[in-house]
Image (cartoon, rainbow, N blue to C red; front, side):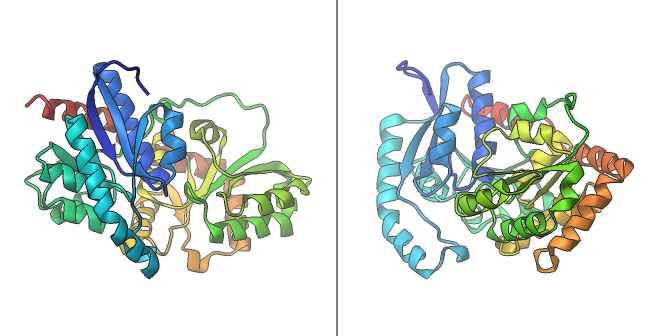
Length: 366
């Protein structure tokens, strides 16, 4: 968050989950590094993790009344969101007119739709960024009115109606791109588990049962489990009773440290998660969220598994016994683990945040 000096502003709109927020943070930090006279301001909603992450990262955050409109939001939530939209449009218009930003980038999430739509209608320079092979409904609609679309997968390009389209990598935080191997204090096998920034109830249940019921398999291993807020207290209490090295966390704020620690990662397969795994070169067991829009997580996981960088497990087939067997096989096969790591690293498109940031700065000078 910058001082009282009158900086020129660029807005990054969106949030909800870490998958939307952290790529935006990577772009924001790069923009401010490249041009010291610009302040990046985030626009989000009180419903998302941006209220925790963005202030911690040092950026200003403007909150809009927003909510879910997609199929996962539920009928009652959709009705509530429709009633919030007029106020979201009014607040967006007021902020834009008063602050006159040079550029507005939508990165997906609850607040992205109304703010980017109003910015486009008021003739501000606008763009959207889409990380998935199949774009969500909001970005497909916004592409009709924004100036430009940045996309990661070739498959997504035909869905955008705007004249300008540019393929880019998926931005990850600089501290992940610069991660280097460090000397280990132990010879144990380190397993990192997380189910997305908000946790996964299903994954939590499987991991908890696997750890508690057959904990002896961990005698040469260590496990860190990010549970999310809802399951943390219950799982943490059970893990405290374990004689093995297993820890639960509600949320992992410094992911670079945990990626550095891990030998193997078990997680969902959102685009941002896959990009981070590629940046740090960590082999993974990917368990796609079966309710993801257009099954995009399964498509992401298949693409990575086909390259030999990860093992794909669909949730419908997932059991603790199966997961435990795969972990132990990888623990005992260092060559395969190393090959998976190298293949994962090869998938990384370096300096994507810098590419997007330079392009945005070029756009505002034209």
